[in-house]
Structures are given as structure tokens and as C-alpha cells.
Amino acid sequence: MIDDLERAVEAMLFASDTPLDPRQLAGRFGDAVTPGQVKAIVEAIAARHAGSGIELVERGGHWHFQTPADLAHLLRRERDDPRKLSRAAAEVLAIIAYHEPVSRAEIEAIRGVQTSKGTLDVLMEAEWIAPAGRREVPGRPLIYKTTDAFLQHFGLTGRKDLPGIDDLRAAGLLDPVDLAFEEAMGELDLVKDGEEA
Image (cartoon, rainbow, N blue to C red):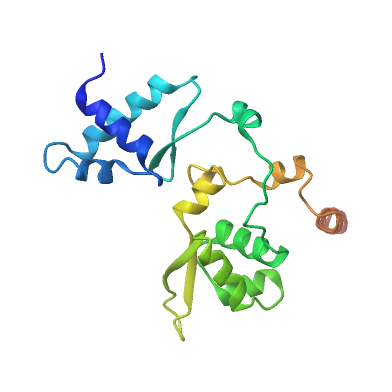
């Protein structure tokens, strides 16, 4: 049987338009409930909804209800996606995600071209990146990191869920130029190994 506390937590999660963490939920009960107790309740709610038409999922330590991925095709509507990223913005976002925290100069060194402030502004307006402080080097450059909104938008629990090079290759997402360069470097290594032998 579901108790009143579990019903209240479930109602708050369902009604919220943003994902909530156990600390935020516990705060709504004053001192009556700890975040640890709320976390156990949230996990029980998630277990109860597993396999149903809605599921409670965790993204970056925050919980929200969503429809299961296998039912998405039934609910999809034709609409324009308001967040179409330019190639430069997608590259910058990927660099930040894989190398965070990272400065603008480090992003430019990886990309090999200058990064406009507008590109970073677009990603910050989307709330996918945020300043993470300053690097303790001369000039103290601002460094950037991804946000919980980034994790939630891309359906990631954490950075460890980012695809690796083998995953990207299998999905056909690596540029043929990148693959040719990688093969050429592998052949160069073989030649060097042969000369040393």
C-alpha cells in the first residue's frame, strides 16, 4: 500500500515542470523528512512505474517522469526543433562535454580555429554549458562545463554515458577524413615499428 508521503512525493514529481533532486523534495516537507528518506521513496516510485506507460528516471541526480523510449513513436508530433545547432556550436559542445572544465583557448586549440563568443552564448542560453570558475594560470581564463540540463536533454545520467570512439564509429558518426587520418597514423606506426625491428 502506498503511504501519504510517497503519494506526496509522486505528486510533486509529476506536477513539476523541471526535474527535482531528493534535497529539493525533502525541503518541501521542512524537517520532517531527510533527503536520504526521499531518495528511497523516489527509488520505490521508480520501481513501481518500471514497465508502465510512464517512467521515473534520474538524470544528473535529478528525477522526472517521462514516457518510455519504446513508446516515443506514438507520441511524436511533427514540429520544428528550436535548438538547431550550427556545426561550430556542436563541435564546441562536444569539446566541453569530453574535456570539461575547459577554457575558450583550449577549445580553440582542439578545434584549430577561433571560437566566437556568440557560439558560447548560444550554448549558455540553451543552458547546456555554464561557467565553472577560472583556471589558476596567468590571465585566469574562464572555464566551462556542461550542465544538468545538457544531461537531461541528451538523456544521459552522467558524463560516463557519453559515447566513446568505438560507439561513434559504429554509429557512422565519424567523418571519413578522421577515419582516413586514423588509418594513416596506424600505418605510420607500423612502418616505425618495422624500422625499429
